[in-house]
Image (cartoon, rainbow, N blue to C red; front, top):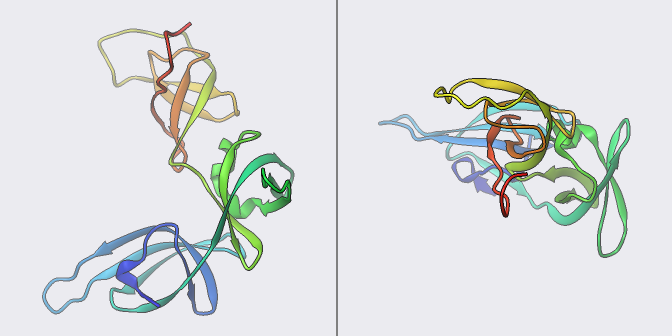
Amino acid sequence: MMVASQLRRGMAIRHQGVIYKIIAAEYHAGQGKMGGVAHLRLQNIDTGSFREHRFRSEEKLEEIPLEKQQMDFLYSDTDHCHFMNPESFEQVAVPRAAVGPAERFLRPEMRLAVEFFEGRPVSVNFPDIVEVRVAETAMPVHSQQDNTWKPAKLDNGVEVMVPQFIRSGEVIRVDVETGKYVERARTEGKRP
């Protein structure tokens, strides 16, 4: 059992008989006689649905251990994303709802941690930032204004807004959760 104030992103808990993965956790300390509050964004591991919940800081919750295995992404179909253990070659199908919107950043042979509960895959841990190549965008414009943006289509089909100096073929870093441009990727040597 853990108190709510100790819960962190990535943990799994059982609440009212349902198992949730913590997607986001914020703790707000109380003042005076008011106790603190833990504000959690939870994902139901069975349905993939999300909910927000507040717990009193001293409220006790059961932490559920999740087993993690590094696996390579193979392909997606209409309902599942398929992964393979690189050592045993065992394949598993993770429901698309459990993968969530980050699925659009999956690339073949991308190695990620797949989390299991009682032998069944329940979620996939993505890095916070991924590097993706810009497939097409308008010609770069170099100006004094750094706050102007233009649309760019990435090689995975996702569209993001990028600064004017980005050109087609460059690799950029994108925040997986928000889908927003972070910076130009650092590459060895010079640009083409």
